[in-house]
Length: 176
Image (tube, rainbow, N blue to C red; front, top):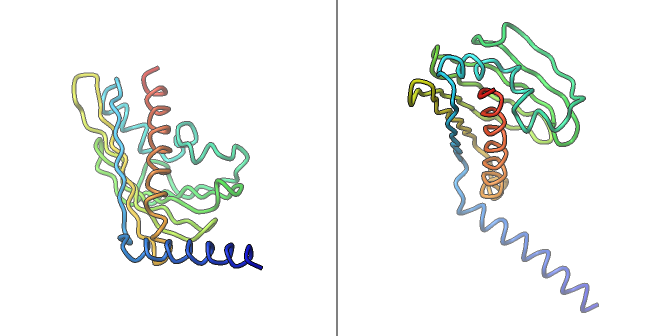
């Protein structure tokens, strides 16, 4: 009986700790990652504005090679939608190009269905830092409702690592 009481106390304490963290954690978050690529800005931008190219560099897309994909519109233009439905890791959702500043940035909205509903805004920006060098900046912004916002510190860490991995892959593709 004492062991059961100890286990119950630990579980309740962990739940209360999580809720306490959620009370003091902001509901919105932003992550920005950058990388320098030895390639001209226009070449880099022409590649990153095409959502279908994420198949080759995005760690998230690569989690399920058999994922079902559906496309609406013309890739690389405002209104293009990249829909996916995959395994537990890949989940389900769609990404829509919202704005393009030609040669400079592409903003998209990601609407998640599963493993949980959510909405994120992504921006990919290409900035020339030399004749043949471009800095790519990738930002993700989102909001999580209470009490799920208690997970933001862990989510930010995980997303930052995945974004860094994806950017390194992007760099290797564009520097070939």
